Every structure is written in C-alpha cells, then in structure tokens.
Length: 132
Image (cartoon, rainbow, N blue to C red; front, side, top):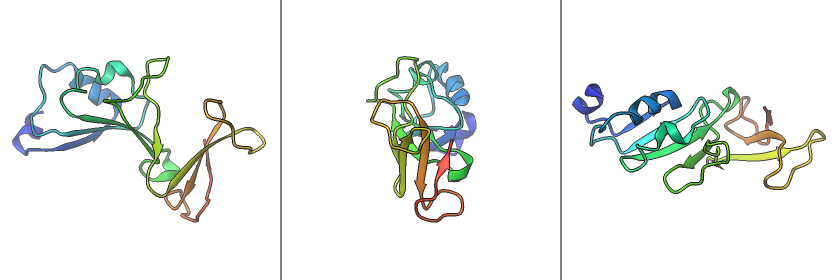
C-alpha cells in the first residue's frame, strides 16, 4: 500500500485474496478509485469493507478469452446464496450463453456450460466458442 500511495495509483487489478488482505486494513490509499478482482471466485467477505472505499468489480474470463469476458459491479450488486458475486455481464464484443449438453441455450437461472463467443476468444473469429 505504501507503493500505491507513493505513486498515486488509482486502479488495482488483482486476485480475490489480494483484495481480501486489503479488506482487513483500516484504510487504503485515497488515490485508489477502482479495484478489479479476477482469477478466482470473489466472495462477499473478501471485499465487504472495501465497497465504501473504492469501486469494486468482479471479472471472469478463462485463458481462451485473453483477459476477461465479463464484469460485475459489486457495490450495488447482489450476492449469490453461497456468498459469492456473480460473473456479471459480457464485456463489449463478447457474448455469453449457458448451454445444455446438446448445445441448446438454457433459460436464465438454469445450470449448464458457460459458452463465450466473440472476437476476444482465442483464434479471434466471430462466434468462436469457448466451452468451460
């Protein structure tokens, strides 16, 4: 945090456990406006004390999407029953669908495979599919 303060860092992108460590601090540098979590499941207890100090986003994206394919704003969001934040909405240029075993799109709230489409998926072609 000393480095962040010394260099007036405004955005920090890291993994949930980094934010969880920051969550235990009495204060964070005033320059920090945006905290982005990715790489693992973000839980409420990782960021509950940070939500009033900076904007916090949960991001999701497997290796096939280079960086991230979706984002979720935590401050005004809803926490799932298991205490985690949703993966959210597709980033610009991406499309996310939940499919059954036969490749049919499932209704909202159903469990299935996350399939990501768009130019950000490896090999970059439109409608390239990443099955997770």
